Length: 491
Image (tube, rainbow, N blue to C red; front, side, top):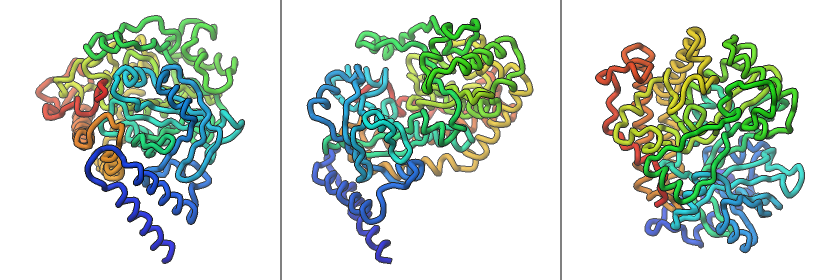
């Protein structure tokens, strides 16, 4: 009883500290008091679970993360974030200290846009717990990403995306929320995302295979290129060497987009297995011998509901992982802050003024500005009646279990309630609390309409091929303000 009473007193203190009205900036005193209250709770009842999955990624609370870094290093990072220099820092997570952690900026377009905005220094960051002290982890976690919610006014796109993948049995990163401070100065609410590397493999895979993060070479973004993106000028993608998963020959050096981006130690035998799988796909062989077809089908079911074009189904040829278990390949998700049809609306889809086309995109035609020939990892599903039927079955399960049941919306409501007080006190936010609230409601409305459209596509009242759809049979999404979900602008 005494324990329960103590927790109630501390939680009342936390609530009182984060229901302060007025300026969006978080006052220094409440932040310090907030951390002291958490320290008290942690000291008396334990800072974290032995397992990071149930401790750091407890989604029923907003965690505290304080980065303690030399002021000269912090200023250097703010001056040259694009260099992604790895600085030594001490980290305090929910009152627990971890020393000599690598701390660096991360990102590409999000980093460049923030840098050139001239109005924000809200970068995303990466923590590597074992860089300074070999073998050090945080309760088993090797690396942690602090995502700044760029392009996501709801703060929920990534969290809900990974949640949805895991609900469908697709191995996906864990995600939670943290309120970040640096040298005691509040930076705001961030999404905490598990790095897809060795600890992820041990947690959600067999842990013994080879992991790759294919990527078509990223081009540094300067101010001129950013202006082109925002004005709708699309960069033509050419010269892919493996990230499209198109087979060319049997030489590993022909696929630098894959093998130069190995997360695990390079393994010639694994490289040959990957090449063999790509060859089997190119020759139209049954993919069941080289792919985990069930997992990949479920991946695409979720991915195509979320409509993330900053990915394999768009032009950019990144934001996915390949896992070679030594028997079959799996396809794993990454980076959904520009999901829900918002990458970027004006430049890629061109449907900012026509949300009907976004909501009703055919589930059998998810590719944007590319072709089936250029995307063989999707082509094998849609080109075979048996696999296409299994894909539709996965879609049926997803829509029934997560959307029509209300589970997705219940989780969205729960998370919105949890993070709203922190959004209201976020001193570096890209969006106002009012904009965030609107984005949360828009995200839920859009998801409901998307699920309704997919239901029509599954029962045959609306074509699953976008080009064959009768516009009068589409779900009416005219009331959706897509730009309210976020954009490539920094306020």
